[in-house]
Image (cartoon, rainbow, N blue to C red; front, side):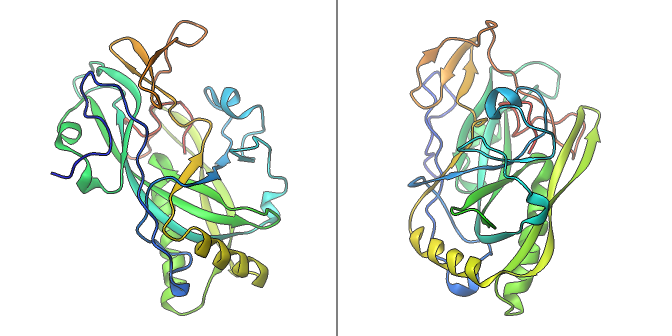
Length: 286
């Protein structure tokens, strides 16, 4: 079994996330999936604001459907008229405490647990334990027209299939030798028995502008062999275990929220009503 990059699910302190190193994309790979992992570069999350749960606490107050820079917490104005250009994408597999077990009982904790480069590298202690939920995540590093630095779109849980559709579009262009494409960001309402949310997707918008192609190539070279960490205000800073709230960066027990309780996981998956999910550290779907 591959050695995990995180502490096993015991009473040992929870460790920080692990991601995978990014190989330099060849020009024909721009916008397509490549192997990836761990954190040298800090890139902000490109977040679709839902106006749900504790989102205001993480991102400030915005109108539902607007896009927010995860580092500055500022809205990106006029996104309906802008385009994005994908630089590359990478997959990872994340482990979270399940919202509840199949028998309806609560697991031993809540929140984020660990990230692994691939599903094959998730230890059996997680995969075979009903206290945990294992999910694939698709991270797309993109340029946004009018912005000077890349951002990361995270497709997980409720939007993972839309991320796969994005990957299909970019791969099709690469296969036909058409180079980088431009895309409009859109969203549609979705719902299930657990609630409703906005699900992001992309629409083709022709060829990427020349200046954005030049920037994409420059950033692809700059990030070659490096590691990406996403600045994501809602990412699980806290996880709970046995009633304690754990700082996932230090492994130390920290105080609960102001109301005396720890963050509780929420269920937002659109594939099954009784979902336990990657959104478990917050009630904000992605």
